[in-house]
Length: 217
Image (cartoon, rainbow, N blue to C red; front, side, top):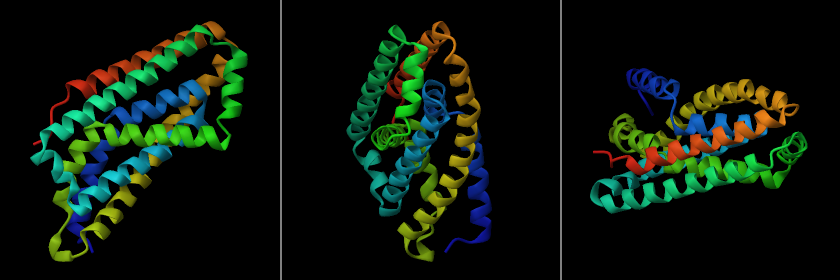
C-alpha cells in the first residue's frame, strides 16, 4: 500500500521526532524514575495506544477538525494542562511522605492489573494531549497517506504500527535505564522525596508547554 520512497522518507521523519525528547518520552521516563521500569513500560504502552488514536483520526480525516475549529484545540490543550498539573500535585504529595517502604509498596502494586491499567491510561491521555503529537499527526502524518493507493485508514494503521514499534523500543530502553535509580532510592528516603519533587516540576513544565502551545497550521 505504501511505495518504498515514501516509506524511507517516513522512517527518516519519524526517527528525527522520536530521538527529539518530547512530552511522551519525558512522561514515561518520569514514571520509570518514580515507580520503577515496569511503571515506565506500562506508560509507554499507553503512549502507543494514544498515538494509535491520533493515526486513526488522521486516516479518517478527523485530524482536520483543529484547522476548521481552533477552539477545539484550545479546549484540548487546556484539558491537557489541567491533567498534567493534577499529576504534578500527586507527585508533590507523594514527596511529603516518601519512604523506602512506600517505594517498595508502589513497585509491588505496579505489577497489579488495576495500577497497570491506570499507568497505561495516563500514558494514552498524555499522548493524545501532547502538542508534539497533535502537530505531527495533523500536519506531517497526512503527507504520507496516498489516496491513490486506497484505504487511507489501512495506510494509517500500517504506519502507526511502525511508529509504535520504534517508539516503544526507544522509550522502554530509557525507562529500563531510568528505573534503576528507583532501586537506589529505596534505600535513600531523603533522595526519594526530592525525586518526587523533581517529577512534580517536570509535570508542571509539561503543563506550561501544553498551555502555551499554538494550534498547528
